[in-house]
Length: 389
Image (cartoon, rainbow, N blue to C red; front, side):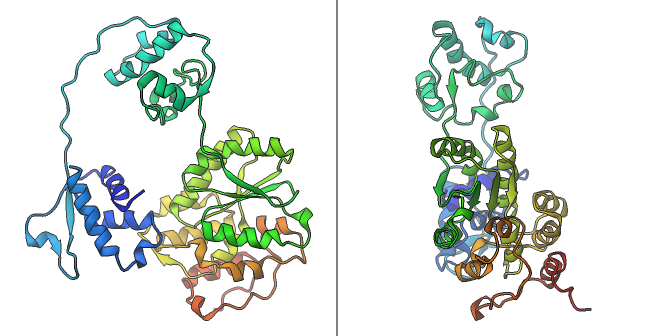
């Protein structure tokens, strides 16, 4: 997703017509961790603003007062959402529905609902026992567009239990498979969000002395993870290698924590264990230098951090409300290797935290300390020395 796409999504969520450009820029930064330090950031944001205008999504300021000329190229201080024109509402003509869709005759439906149900009605009339096929195939057959039914599981008729993918659409979702690597025979799967941390952990675990302690390693690509987690069952079945523990290590930010919560619910719904935080890795990550980010509200931060164990949830929530986040890149490969030791079983180190021992030396480039409140809370709760009075 481009900076302009992320800004457009942010713009669409705004209630006010006039929107601060700083809010749109923050949305662009949030989707690309490299953008905040890029020397081309200002040019990328300026081009994105022009793209919003060209798409008819926003108007830019006309007077010089609405622009920031402190550097080149100038950036707007705000944009105005373009109000979409509403087509005249037309009452759908009455129609007959097959028995499987008789709910359509008893509730109030919109024109869009009738447009959705029409081709489905034809399918059930002509092929009531049609073979179950991938959802994209059925979407192309019924609407001439393979993506028309992409988000059908969120549709209000599906959400209310009236429309069913298998019974009515004769289809099944086919999410992209979860990228998984069987590094050893142990019955656990650790999912890692970012490519750098994934590569580092793959290198470390691939050379673990006791292979019997190592299990699966998966790469979860952001929001795609929630959709793809059910596909892990197929890999477990094909390799005859089921799991007892399902762990995740992601960025400590609102999106990463929400994704973990949604994925945990989805995992349990399909028969997998609940998705648990790799607390040992998160505990270490919380001692690293954070980066700035638009602050979350206290309620939002507490709700997101509730997925973590209590001794990590409190400092994590404080971090988010302080306008800070922690990316996995803040805890690089040398520190990961020093954290995980072959002297004790591996899974408890990932799931619960390594036993207390002298912390590995920190390179000079990583000596910027996180907020004292965050660091001291983690040390105190994890059993280390209490902060000095």
